[in-house]
Image (cartoon, rainbow, N blue to C red; front, top):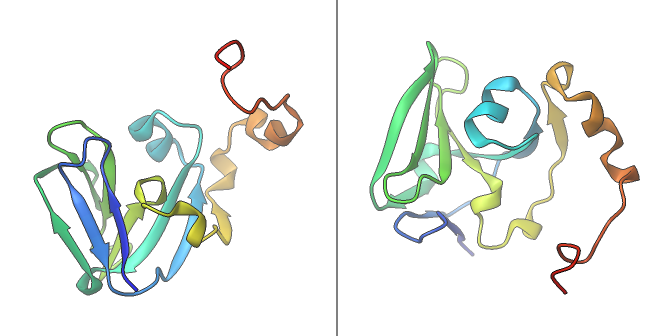
Length: 133
């Protein structure tokens, strides 16, 4: 059963023939600034089991890593580092067609976690955006 995903506009799709090696939530500042989100989910796949269709663009976000995004809509998709994660393609788990299928098993870079992120479960929760029901 393949695992599939796509960018926001659908111009880039990906398919993995095996389950991810791990799924982690990253709190580092680099991920936060790149995504614009307080935490980013990453599903790590062996590169050789992933097929990507569509045009991505990338940039070297650090001396050891490249981040790729959809050339059309800008959705963040992939993280590659031959130095830090040889043979691994990290894929933003929010781009999975079924993100519930592989729950995260760890949080990483928690030394960079925003203080208020520790208390998110205590915030009021609404089924939809307040006033938009």
